[in-house]
Amino acid sequence: MSKFIQSSASKLYIPDAEVYYVPGFFTERESERYYTQLLEQVSWKQEKIRMFGKEMPMPRLTAWYGHKAYTYSGLQNKPQPWLPLLLQIKEKVELATGHSYNSVLLNLYQSGQNSMGWHSDDEPELGPEPTIASVSLGAERRFGFRHRHNKAQKNIYLTITHGSLLLMQGPTQHNWQHAIPKTSRLIGNRINLTFRNIVS
Ligand SMILES: O=C(O)CCC(=O)C(=O)O
Ligand SMILES: [Fe+2]
Image 1 (cartoon, rainbow, N blue to C red):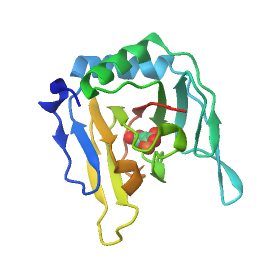
Image 2: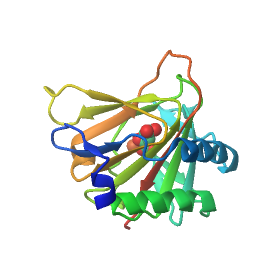
Image 3: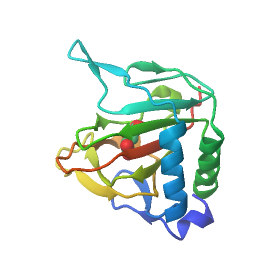
Image 4: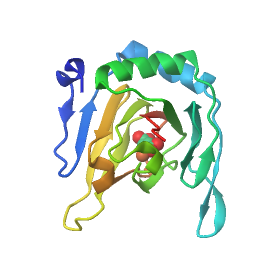
């Protein structure tokens, strides 16, 4: 983590993990601009997932940019060439986190009924202790952590705000799962970008 981010990030009290959260990582103006332009420029896709042997639409839209294919939720993401806008955001995130990323997965949650199930970003392509930098724009959502090994450990939830950065690294993916639960609140779109580095 760079000097720059150290001053504004708080390390969350999550045992067996290394998670930092920076609300207001982007200014209000930057956040508004990125939100509007990403909604417009990203080629959002409705992918399918297999659940209990049945094909179902994913409960969100997704897009994958970067130079390598990557398997996620059992589906092979076809990477698209970087957009200048995404490169701009990537550079800011790299500078702040002191890590570099060669791909980004984008999620568009169009209502409270859109969600992300419990999972760890622990695909072998990401290496043993992946650093994952997650930018959020638009509606606020709850982000949950669930311990994978210690049943006595309660789930931990935080509210992820517009223009924030969440950084997960070290043993986080090994020990915890995370999710964006559904909510019955009437809310607008949320865009999430997770920057990753594919090592193999
Ligand atoms: O939308 C989020 O904040 C979570 C995204 C996520 O966990 C993922 O793409 O792997
Ligand atoms: Fe994830």
